[in-house]
Image (cartoon, rainbow, N blue to C red; front, top):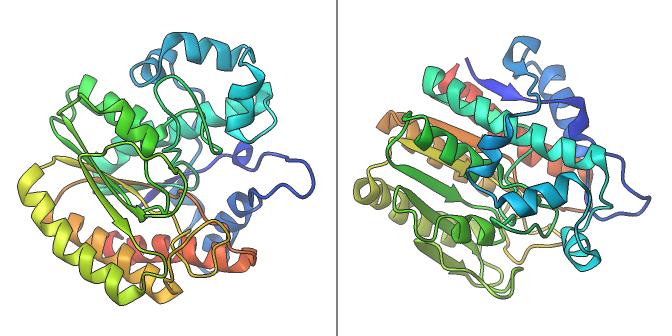
Length: 300
């Protein structure tokens, strides 16, 4: 069974006109239940994780300042959300959704998180709507618990996973792969183990050709026993914060290929949703829902 992390706290209230589409976290599970892709049985509710799981990926001083709401004004501004106890609690619960998702993926082959993909969170700072790096926390949880020996992070959000690259820059048990818009934020990139920057306007055909040549070789090279997949839908042509020109069908084929590759290799995979900023909220939800539909068809 495909298990999916969701908590009502995922939809956090923001000031009117804020550019982050927080409503998607409420609409996405509603859509999956309405259409019958998922049932209530698929969902589980994460809670607050133990601090030591978070501290395996983040500096203690930063985490204490975050929880105590003691970040400097400039540090808080880089995050892009008004800081509050509830917001920080939300971020911790999202991380727990990914931690528990790792366990479900080991049991069932796959697990999903309605939120997550907070790959701009560094070990010692947050930025761009990311405060705690859920997949980095999940990877360290697996490694420290001896549940995995070699982890591959596949980051296909339109933005480079700069925080993830920094966290694992000297950790050879985690291989970081980021395929992203060359001209997109962050404008000063970090160095992943493999970065593939894509030109503005990259189409479905170009994107999928590169991905299908790269991923099978990467699995042979890295030989991971666990995979994290960050499946941002900000690769769409309609995205306000992206520079690529992918269609809904192209994005769905991307997900199908990644999940099929994991499935055939019998490597457990945890999926976090990442970004999506198209002006039409229906398009964002549809693109994310395609990821869950694909997983359901393959693993249920």
